[in-house]
Image (cartoon, rainbow, N blue to C red):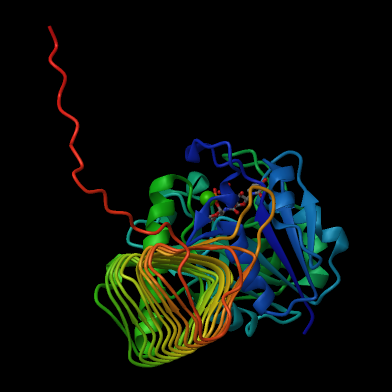
Length: 455
Ligand code: UD1
Ligand code: CA
């Protein structure tokens, strides 16, 4: 089967009250349209066509990719008209219609739908709704066969009583679609070319209309305003939380946990409340993440512990290493196994060897730190001279005293030590102690200043 996918995304979305086109509004950190494209790709289609209109340039700019063909519908004359804009470039035997503002549609549902389409059969995704107001209704004959879809505004009282609604998502034999679309009229309550009128035409042409049902209403729910957007967000998060729990993650509270990207997890992972995982996050077995942590594009190897209120972006934490509370690991941070980063420590483009430690109040930027080295509290690498960044290299088993300024570029060789309060500007040879601070002077008989008399 060769498949073409058409995603409708030309509508305005007035109720969002936004300068951002509706389909670019985010759910879980990705635009609604981005979610739909992601699902579409997993079906491995021949081609994907996105029909754009309102905010077309912004949409194209944001989502441009080699495998996407953007088709502009300059006037929104209806869903049938929108699909017709893409039809001249379609060649597959099946055309699947999706919607840029229906982001939670599941690949498995679409696969079930596609399994039902053939040259003489359409497949329609429907949903049972307690209150289908606004939806097209699925009209069936006494044998239960679909005869037509009637839009809410065109429906009779009896038709409005039907609870089975049209999700809008359908798969059609490609060969016939051009003909059906060319015969649509806009003689209806909304003066639009309805895609849904294709159903009655197909039936008249002797096609069977098979149906498949959505798992739940949220899967096929569109977002027209920010309230619905928030509902989709919550539903997405709940789905993601359930997926992770099924894989062996304990979430202290699934309602206070957010994923905005792709997360892979091992077993016996424990995630406390208010954790946000963003981008590509890899979490191996036995990892513990404390409350209020933000973790983006990072890898946490087996047994890592990230303590409360830590912020990670582009970090790799090796087996059994730990960070926090209040740690900040910026891009390029690599902690080898058992390395320890404590509170109020910031790392950027820094590599800490196995078992190395930076326990408190430290900034390590553009730094290489050897195994088992200890960095004293209050130490900073002075990696920036106002124009360029320079590297600090610290060997294995080094002891850096408290409150050091390590002025890069500088090398501190293995087994060296530095005294507290040192400003290190030169190489420290292997095994030696560097003390680079003013010597203490005690002044005998020192008199404290006395307050002047104001008269
Ligand atoms: C449509 C269906 C209805 C279904 C409902 C589900 C039709 C005629 N009706 O109604 O049966 O129950 O969806 O939500 O298809 N769009 C374009 N270009 C256009 C018009 C629409 O790209 O010219 C896009 C919109 O951006 C939107 C989607 O198509 O994403 C649906 O359009 P909308 O006008 O919201 O259709 P509904 O009236 O909701
Ligand atoms: Ca709609």
